[in-house]
Image (cartoon, rainbow, N blue to C red):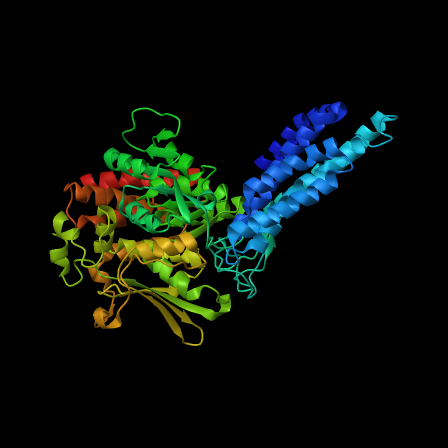
Length: 609
């Protein structure tokens, strides 16, 4: 069964080809107008590709040229070539005047001319065939001759797409990394050049990619733009804009307005703050998951608004700052739509890492981690070969109860649990930091992001939260990423990866001010929920999803002061070890969601017992 896009191409062609036959039969200005429209559309695709490479075409000039060439070819016939030459000289003069010597004028002019000439210049030959000197004597023959290149182009183009689809559907599991390790599920890329974790593999007809680290797949062929105008800025959707990650993202974007624009915002229930953000940023789409009165154009309600925002056609980057399992479907939809997902929602990979990998492969999307620890690791390993990496070390602050005795920890209050010593975060993630569940989730996430075995991921306590992650290589060398605690740096890196752009919004690192840095071994008896999470990772299948679901329920009950802090780990352990629910593979979204729902029910029952 071919992909949905391929079916759509064939369906559209069934209508479009007879329509084109009729237009070619009419000829004259009707044909010239149709070719002008096609020329503008074709030039637009070329210019969109150029923008992703950091080249700024003179779009309006190019579109006008693309529309004018077929019309001039019909109207002026012989003299059209002279008018075209005058037009091109005007374009070059205008480009040099507007762009200056530092604005890459030659690249801008070259791509502008290429776009309009390639798209419309080639189409203009159809007019020459249709209205040639002898065409009037044998019109039927010349109509068929005109249609011939159009049909051949469509057939070859669609055949290439079908072959690409077939290769992706049948062959990808046979791909192996250069060290003959197992297939790496999601492809993390690290800039240009042969620095990857996988051999290059072809996907659809659009592009063949070099897969590098197992999570990031640069679906747009490169980094972000270093100099952009408003009409060239990268569209961003922020899921959870009223939360901690969402607010930090908007602070970053406020300093990078030349590079990015906010296209979509969604919030959970804070309608007042969401309205303020919408008024300030004027996005094309706004959604409120809980509390929206009615849906309107450009407005969304319910959980469906998350997917709607994530797949908005003007969005290229989706910042997923949603807490918990609610972010999974939006991530999958964004990846299938070919978007970059700047992922702060670690639960997505914990629940359904294999499904996320599949969505990225099929849709051409990519994931760049926003978690400070995984961002740190990415910055350390980007560009390295797979055989070089020996171990990852994630750091944990230890939370507010690092020095407490276990019996005292079990009686901790909500207020005590929310007093994190180094980070300012939302309530749920702050409690996860106190139980160290967040580190168990991050270990599972690192497994999928960087395709390392669980035994190659260690966690150490680092109370100062200055070093965010280590990467140890096979020769014994260790790289670390260092910085004062802030989420704005990993957010910015996820937006601009693999490039770095100037930014003055965060505190610069000062080793003297950082003072003494200490490290401690993680004590399992102090953090029993972390131990359960590592066991869920070992079990695999739907166990991580059940672990995550049980934790979400237990944390919410604790925040509502319905259970004691010490019962969080107890509830999670009971759910993960429950034998009544199957432990099969997470083979589909339905299976994962079923396991999630069952775990939530069991967690509620465990809390009441």
